[in-house]
Amino acid sequence: MKRNLKIITILGTRPQLIKASSLSNLFKKNRKIKEIIVHTGQHYDYEMSDIFFKELNIPKPKYNLNIKSKYHGEMTARMILGIEKILIKEKPDYTVVYGDTNSTLAGAIASKKLLIPVIHIESGLRSYNKKMPEEINRVLTDHCSDILFTPSKLANLNLKKENINKSSIYEVGDIMYDIFLNHYKKLKKNNNFVSSDILVTIHRPENTNNFGKMLNIIKNLNELSKMYKILFPIHPRTKKILKQFDVFKLINKQIKIRKPLAYTETIKHLKYCKLLITDSGGLQKEAFFSKTQVITIRGQTEWPETIEAGWNRLVKPNNFSIYDNVLKSISKKGYNKRPYGKGNAAKLILKKIIKLHHSK
Ligand code: UD1
Image (tube, rainbow, N blue to C red; front, top):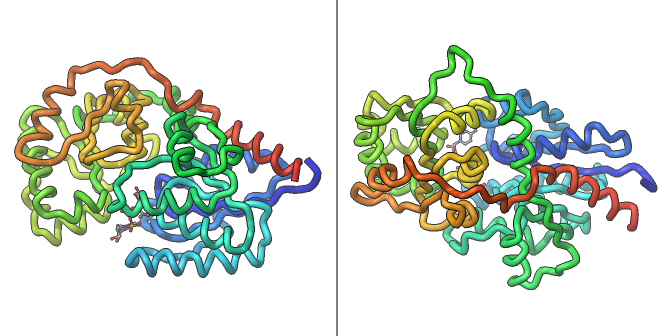
């Protein structure tokens, strides 16, 4: 490499820590690369942030902006302000952003305005639902990125439709697959591990902010808990809202409510459960990787390949729709497809960044 390479990585939320872990660990091993991690502080509870740094061995952030929860405009604006100052001081060669959160968008805008090239990892995903904050973040981030690493053929196609320069797009596979493979093979069912039949996670505002939907989800889960062992690790947003709606107390006592789980714990439960009910993007895929059936409580998904391969179905919560689909899904088998690469995305990304830097 012609000279040392300085990279600023912007992180802020739980899924971004998981996504960054593989590449950050590769950066750490390369003496010619200096990575500086900036944590926006979007997620701040121990279970939403610190635990992942420890578990996945992610280098400590040099900066933590401590922004915490705010209205989206204020949150994003404060992040841009903080990130801009750091970028001016550190003068990196590239800024790396992951996924589709407010932290992603803030990092991309701050960097692009300073003409520091933006690298977007997990680029090209679309739900085509502009009511989702993540969809806005994705589209805007992709359009101000200089290097776009995509997880799938469909993601490339989505970018092509929006006239994004083809020569800046590189399909490398899904970076979450790397870390998944790494941990999955080491999982062991030790004595104190209690598996469940159904794992549940719900955190999207389109569900949590709608009283009727949340009530319906609880009604369905309560019914299912008569037949299946259910584990429900609860996102802080969901817990807060269920309490505000005064419906937390309606959850059947048989349903195990837990704090958000660490990474290995999550994939272990996925491995040994029969079914996942979720509205998370990352978990839909992790379930797909571990060949576990999924019911996604949403109207659309950014990961349609999981549906085509027979492992996922979209269900809108009304009446007993979730319950009925659980009965249909639970013994179903999908196909053995691998649309998200080989689990070597981080290596491919590193190679490409070094090559691009060399040819600058
Ligand atoms: C964010 C991302 C979403 C991602 C999710 C993963 C955006 C727009 N959304 O959603 O794409 O799937 O992270 O979890 O960026 N809270 C806490 N402690 C925390 C974090 C959050 O109590 O550590 C509570 C707060 O009440 C906050 C709420 O959760 O208001 C939502 O947090 P926020 O960061 O706005 O969005 P997420 O729902 O976590």
